[in-house]
Picture 1 (cartoon, helix red, strand yellow):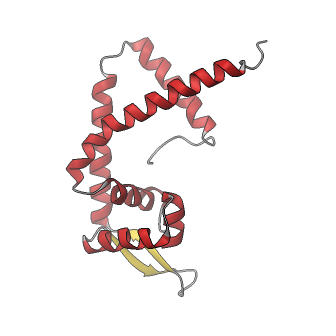
Picture 2 (cartoon, one colour):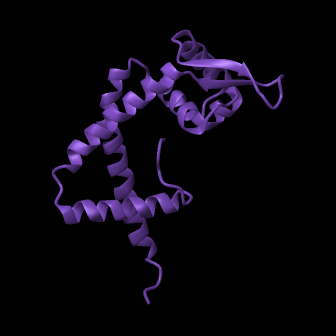
Length: 152
């Protein structure tokens, strides 16, 4: 049975994975222009569509921005009819932000464009390469908490 990989190998693979992930996301992010939303607004909307309703504070924490920044983003999204603020069913004093049907449609269309762009890249792979990449994605999903990387 094989032991754990040596630290130099771990660091080399981590460095390559980081670089590849950055370049891959930059490539598919080009598709986001079709949504008409800034990257920050699209990202916040994504959290609401895939994780569900959230307070401004929770959304700010998820997006790693300050609450005033998220308040401004939510106001812009609300002005476009992509989100709405409502009283929490659990505690009427708490205001939740949730995606509207229009917001969900906009976000899902943006995701489809990204996935199609990624699919176009993957279409050039041989079957064995696609299988190996699928196995690598399964490993990444396990490392990220055991949940399939859907939605985000």
